[in-house]
Length: 613
Image 1 (cartoon, rainbow, N blue to C red):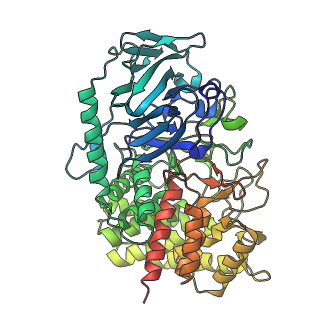
Image 2: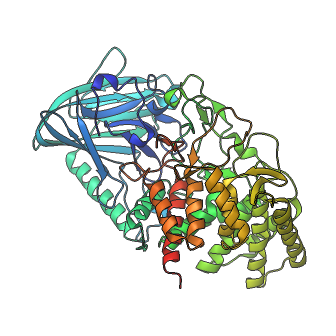
Image 3: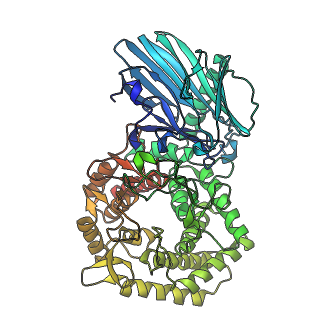
């Protein structure tokens, strides 16, 4: 990658794909290829950001370690880990910066709760060859740059304070504050030089003074590398696209909240679906809709413990809610913050508003009944998980709700912020709820209204096949009775509603390829949804198309499309929520868990298709 002069770095936005991700299963940080930490929330994924230059280049906080002047850069994760190494090359030499959030294994079986959280970032600087003039800059802005923050240099680094929080920079290079409030310093790094810098968050205004012992940091690096390598050794997948699947597994582990086992959709908020647009949402929550795919993807590649940790989180949540489920929750099972706009932040490349919290939590989305019941059915059938009578009472209530409410309108999978409609995807979710509940009850001999469930399941099926299918153009539509095309129809064979060989599925896939696809990438839909502006292609929908091609035996086409989609990943193998089909730019929150889950499922479907008798 081509670097830029240091004087330009505080006023410009970098491409989303320019960022790498590190984390410790409690929080995460995005680090640009220029060595700048531009996004980090402490102490949890959903905590207020300490560094947020990602969302305001002028006022958002950051911490950079990188060369002065012009440079080139290359980077990679160290082996099978989430430890990021960036090498800078200038006209006079080369140096390397290695970034990590320390993590260690405290239990032999890698249960979710074993990952400690020191709320710390370690940065190792090494001189590789020649000499490099290196700059260190430190400017945190607590609470999304809302809190009054003071940064004071001291012996061995600096301390930033805001209210009852602090962030300590430990640095062997002398630093001082400039007129803009940035604390920094410069040093020449020569061949063989080696030293550590650390950032430590504390929920107190009076933390310990800066200290970073090289021996301790070396130990943390070794222990963190051991943790990630041991964890990835549990991956049993050895089929096509092996490396992409393994990297996606590592991304998903980074997006898992260790204490609960919940998986967030993404570690960011308000990265836009189109530059300058208003479709900027907070994704630092756990969606129930993702649950069945999470369980399937993790289980099928060998991560039974992680899948069971998430299952227990979902089981506890479902039982405590007694069937009155929301579409999303915080990582500890609470309610997301009420949505608010931070209007003082200009947003990524002037894409505002910047939002925290998520108003979609209050929406009615009927498909979640099916997602939860499909998850429970999968765990019982594939993992032998017992169904406690109290849990079955809750699941039975969900199935009864699906039977009673499937004829109601809702906001649908895409969380449209407008008038509720009769979305096809929601009807499919209700059908799946009853279908999986029937299988569970039959398999385990559990008490249920089998006759009523059978009747309503067939009624939903009939409504989908008659009102949800437009025979004049040969497509399943977005809304019952409305001739609008939607990529959500691609899940029909994935849910088992119809086989991939059904001519109605064939014609729907063909129309989506013709009308919703650009440069091999699939849009969700191309109709008005009540919000201004448009959006890029959704990576998830492109992987759905891969799945359909693989299930239909069109393996060469599936492989070609899979490789086109994964080809948009950055140099570290990371993918966002959306992709601009024309520029190839990654857009939306990043990296996106659902995208990487879908990548794993598509690779599995291709592998199964190739081994089909």
